[in-house]
Image (tube, rainbow, N blue to C red; front, side):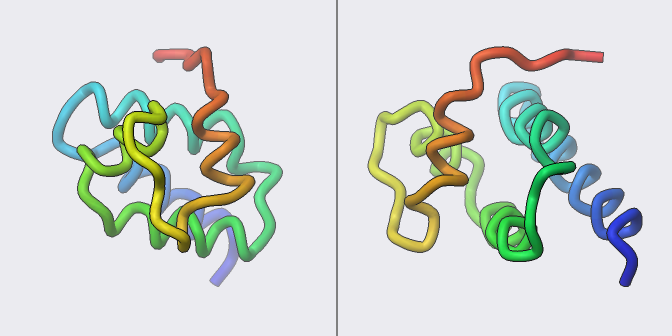
Amino acid sequence: MDKTRIYARLRYRAWHRGTREADFMIGGFFDRYHEQWSDADIDWFEHLLTKEDVDIMAWAMGREAPPSPFDGPMMEMMQRLDYIDIP
């Protein structure tokens, strides 16, 4: 499958989480960084999207330690995200 389709699917899932706060955090993270992601990073993000928003947000805000599959450079990047352009 070509990356354009993958990105379109992931962007939709990232921006349609159920709450505006989660949409902005997860969708904004995707918009800001997805163009530089490797195939492994895309897999990581796709796996992240299977988790509950409250967990993702707690990990990203540093309120809870992320479990080992999500701990690492991608989560650190998400934790450093300090600006999201809201369309």
